[in-house]
Each structure stands twice: as structure tokens, then as C-alpha cells.
Length: 419
Picture: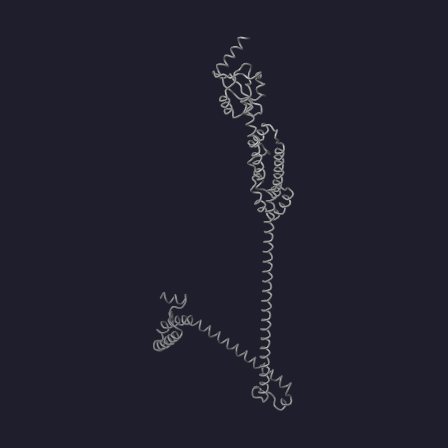
């Protein structure tokens, strides 16, 4: 019973899985069986068979509803088609009548057009004319299609030529741009090389002009040239890098002028103190001073040449200075024994040729005995000796082979006894 109720309210259930033809056959058989049963047993058939038949009929109607809807749609379509066919026939008849009236009015008077125009004697002639018009229309359509196809073909060819021309133009533009970039890169490379040469030769005017050209190309191109110089700015705006470069060029030019002045100031009569002062300035450079570790090759080369020249001149002066120091009498009070050459050589090496007081070389050096804190032979310059309040011996003192320290102590004792 639950299945029948479900079929009644929830959709088909009796005819589930059954085709339309089988459903029709089943409904016919059920209707015949119910009628026979109703004839023999009216009371039982009314109360038993009728409800079952109604349920089956409702389910049958639900089952066959898509077919009925489809049939109704087909029928409606057939009616529309028949109506359209009738309208076409009426329109065709109207066109035929209009044609016959315009071209064969005399014939229409004797033979009027009836309900069916197909039987009229002018119908074949009209059909022939329609056929000729159709052929002409088809021919015209074909010509129009051919012309349209040719037009489209010409348009495609024109578009193809236009695209090819645009492609060629674009390719030329790209090639021209590539050549322009290559020429620009070549000019930038040449300007970079000229800037390097100008920086190496310290041509300030060329540095300024070439630096402007290189910086217009790119900041990277400018840094590629100036990066080898540690004292030039490596970051920041281009203007600051250019300003730093020009200031360094000025500083390098000043240093080279200073080196040239030093070279020009060196003569054959220059004292050894000047050479030591130059070496000291090179060894311990202050800010803005010359240095053998300068980041400019010209400055390093000039300092190297200057050092070679100083070294050559110093060697001669050192020999002369040492000979004069060794040949001089002791810078001491009178009657002081002179030191042996071995002791002088030892004192000279210990002091490295420098004065033990001011620790600087001098053209006028001599030896004398230092008493405190221990007795030793030392090397001292005339300026420092004058501060010690000692005077030179009047003449050469005869050298003896005795112990010099004992002789020196005896001379000190003799001096005290006289006092």
C-alpha cells in the first residue's frame, strides 16, 4: 500500500522501468479486465476494481505526460508549418496574379485565375520567368560572393603587406636602435678609455669634459673608471662622485707639484738632513702629503724615482758624513783620549748613524764619552753637543793602546785635582 501512495504523490511507481508501448498495453488490459469484472460483479467491481484502475490511470497519465507534451509540440509545429505553407501559397498566388495583371492582362480577361493558380495557362511561363530570375539571382550572388572573396583576398593581401611592412619597419627600427645602442656603448667605451687616460695623465680639463660624457651614459660606467682609485667616492649621486674626482685630481696635481719642487730643490750641495726629511715625510705621510702608497700611479712612480735619487745621493753623503765623523777629534773637554775606530764603528751602528739625543742625522756628527748612567761612547750632532756645554779639543790627541775607560776616569780625576 505504501508503494501505491508513493506512486500517487511522489511520481510513477506502477510503470517504473516500463516503455510507453508496454504501458499502453498494460492500461488497455487493465481497463478490459476491470470492465469485465464490473459487468459480472458491479458492487465488488465498483468498490475494488475502480480504485485500483484510478490509481493505475493516474500513474499512466504521469508516465505518458512527456509523450503527450511532445505530441502537442509536434502538432503545434505542424500547424505552424501548414499556416506558413498556406501563407507562402497565398503570397505566391498574389505575386502570380500581380505578374499576370502587369504582363498578360488580355489573357486574364478570357482566363481568370481560379482558386488553384497551378492550373492556369500562364503558370508555366511565370515559373520559367521565376527560374530565370532565380538563376540570375544565383549568378549575381555568385558574382557578389566572388567579388567579396576577391575583395577579402585583396584585403588580406593588403593586410599581409601592411603587416610585412610594419614588421620590416619594426625590424629596421630595432636594428637602428641596436646600432644606436652599439654606437652609444662604443662612444661610452671610448669616453671611458679617454677618461682613464686623462686620470692617469692628470689632465684636469680632459677629466672634466670626459667625465661629463661618461656620466651621461650611466653611473655604473663612471664608477668603472674611478673605482681603481680608493680615494674617490664610490657611492652617492653622480654630482658628488664627479666633485670627489675633481677634488682628488686637484690634490694629486698639488702632490706632483710638491714632488717636482722637491726634485728641483735637490742640488749637489744639499745637506743630508734634507734627504732624511723627505724620506721621513714619505714614510710617515700626513693628510694631503705624498706617500709611496698613493692610489695614483704617476705619484707612486715619481716618489719611486725620488727615492732612487735620494738613495743615490744619500749613499755618497753618508760615506762622506761617516768619514768626517770618524776623522774628527772627540767632542769632549781637553786632554780626553780619542776612541779607537772599532769603538766608533760600534757606536755608529748602535745609533744607526743618528744623533743619540735628537735621533736625527746631521752633516756634522762626532763622538764623545757619555758618563751617566754608564760609561759609553756615543754619537752626537754639533747642535746637541753645544747644549751639553762641551767644547772641541784644541788638537789631535795621541791615541794609546791602554784601556780608554781607565784613561777617561784618570782624566776626570786630574781635572778635579786641579780645581
